[in-house]
Image (spheres, helix red, strand yellow):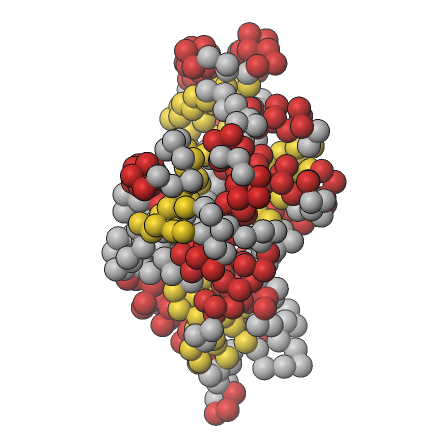
Length: 452
């Protein structure tokens, strides 16, 4: 069996890869591993379980709840809520464990299971590894030690979660949104009720699209992976800005009043200056990945904000932030983490803070986002090569060095082996798109020659 846990929990096609039996077994294993680690010592254990609106989430939620309760864990079912809401409630309700059922921006047939530790933080890698080992041991025959009688877990629906989470979001805002007109694209996902409620309570006039989840339409031609409908709606309604989430609302991308996209790098740039202005940007530092646009790095240098870059993946951004106490980090894809108020990327919070900056300054989002110029970026995937030799090939190193000399300080080269496929990703940035394409094409040829 291959490793179940990826960088963001366990994911797969629901009822094919991710079955009810797997969901139940992993939940029982998680309860036993945490009990053995001493997490439940001295009290009756409690878990928060939430999901996005996918049809498969209904039976997977039932399996997770059954597994936890059979292992002696009391369960609070919070229903359909964003991933960051489940993380927040895990901490706010003093739960020992949180479980979110979602495949985020993936298509509807997929689903996933993500575990949160006490406080709403991502479960440590070593605990995930142990859960997987224990699950496999018992899947192949070792019996579980099961409580009986009053020892079994009790299951309760917790209906206050939405209001509690929205109140938290409103309490975080530095100012209200009165006078703003905002279009919200909820991706027919987990934020379909939360986000409109939060923006309305904060004072914005809202127009919603993609806010009618039926279990089958999540991420379907809408949300942060398909901005066309949001761009059209912003123009149609004469809105000040538009906000797009993905299926579990841990991402946020935006659209300015002209319909132009504002990506995660631009959002980070706007929020970094806003937070520094109110002395909330600790060490005047923002954390991003190596895939962030060079324009973002140049803008932060110009504004006197330090940039720390990590490997690709919001988990690495979060690890760097927690280790050094940084307050803001994120990815170009729209995962933005404001660590003082969230333990994971929070799309609704990000959108609210971005809108608050527009309201506070009286400037358009287009004007605010112009702090950075997105340099043209070309990405080529080179398949069927030996990705393990990316760092050791002298021929490839020479080709990269030549490209970097040619681009100078106004361009950048990044060669990255895929984590899941036998291919190498070639990314080139330059001041001119044709120049970027030319350099990327030559480097792709060099990768084929050196590693093919």
